[in-house]
Length: 107
Image (cartoon, rainbow, N blue to C red; front, top):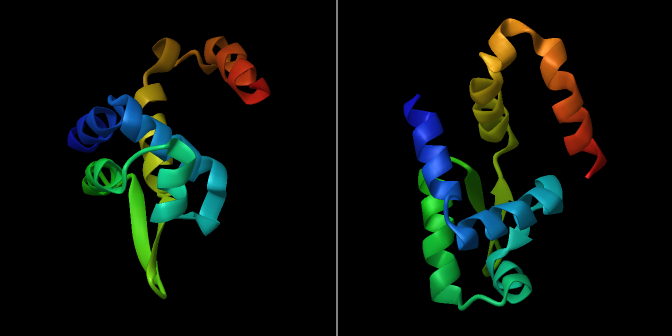
C-alpha cells in the first residue's frame, strides 16, 4: 500500500502528471529533460523538481546519454499500481469493470 500512496501522491500535481503523461507517450525511448521542459513550457528547475518527485515514487527512471539525461516512465511500476487499484474491483466481478476498461482504450 505504501507504494500506491507514494505513486498517487506524486501524480497528484498537475505538473508532475503532465510530465509523466508525456513520458508515457514517448514510450521506452523516453525524452531528454530539455525536450520535456520545452514541450511542457516549464522552466528547467521546476521540471527538475517534478521529475525528482516522480523518480522518488519510482514512476520514472533516468539515464545519461552524453550530456543529456533521458527520463522514461517505469511501466512496470504503473502496472503494479493499476493492479493494486483494480484488485478488489467490483467485488470480484471483473466483467462489471470491462466496459470501463474498454472506454479507456478508445481514448
